[in-house]
Image (cartoon, rainbow, N blue to C red; front, side, top):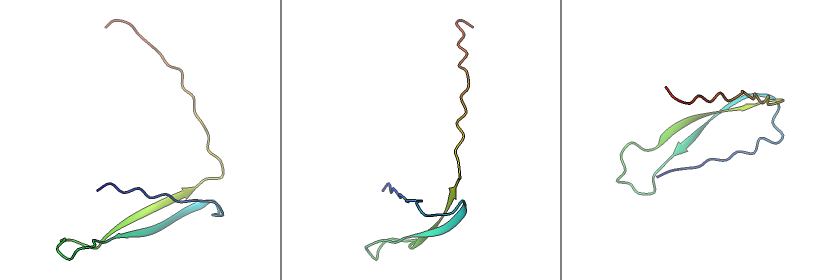
Length: 60
């Protein structure tokens, strides 16, 4: 089953933060639970956008 995680980075200082999301099942017949997923959040002071020119060629 797909899962979406959303985090609001408001109030975090610039830097790298790590954490663990624990995934468990609601039934006892599921093997391999709980699972731990390590996540990394990088908070940047500024994002630089890079714009590259597009080169189109026709033919081989």
